[in-house]
Image (cartoon, rainbow, N blue to C red):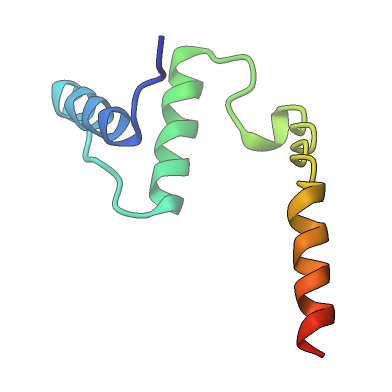
Length: 79
């Protein structure tokens, strides 16, 4: 099953804000403040960003060795 799209998430958030009488935030700072306030009101165990554990670094995709070799050969030929 596919995850919801970004557009669907925004539409859901806007609909929930409208239902609750909340103004949809126009900036990242306003969104962060609203999220923090709502989490505190809901009793969330970690309402602030600094209360959460940092995410592990993203794994990088392995390099395509064939493409790297072709690019190296092409660069050599162009010299």
